[in-house]
Image (cartoon, rainbow, N blue to C red; front, top):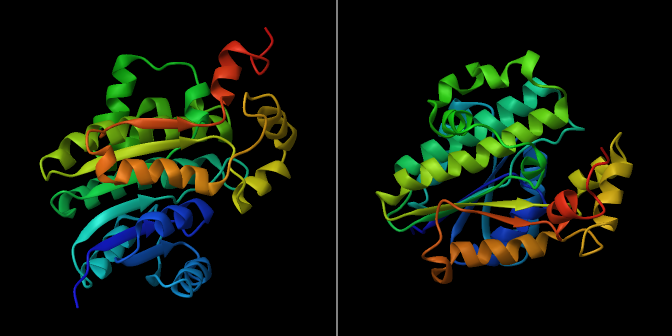
Length: 277
């Protein structure tokens, strides 16, 4: 029997929390670079009554993305996309961050936008990190939003001499995600579909715990200690926002980014997290 299909990329805690919130009654195809992670998420959700199949998928590869979409379409029309795949500044070198988080996300949004069911909806996960980077020029924003995907990594602002370190690469990738969502939302709209972005702050996941124990661990711990909320967030709190964006209650929201960071960005600009001159 054909069902509406949710495409879930990234088998981590945030993606699974969102899928559990809005994926009931659908076929869920979960793709992850680690097939073991995809199988673990699928088993957890299947044991809770969902209908999930795992697939190996490399977000940095258009071919892999197209294979995932083709497999998902065997079960029915893709009506939902949840993109929670990516790598962090402590996990990967600059080149990998740009290829996965920036280029791969752009390709995924583009390809799903071509086939998303009429009235479908998608969310992608970026990061508060992109909000702490100085503003880009209007021209740079336009280039990140609209450059053909296969030319994105050739942009001058993304060349090695213009990227300071892995954190800067990550910030550029997440800024690009948000601009790309704006541009792609216009295209998705021709199918009556909506696309939005969520920019989480520090959310406790295995990936975040890697960061806490990495070279910038003290930086992250200080960040959530000095944000107005005074704590890190949970994957379920991100899912609360996704549920709004992906439901009829969010029907007038598209092309937007919602920042959910406990006020860390506010504190960075106007509070105790503000960098010392």
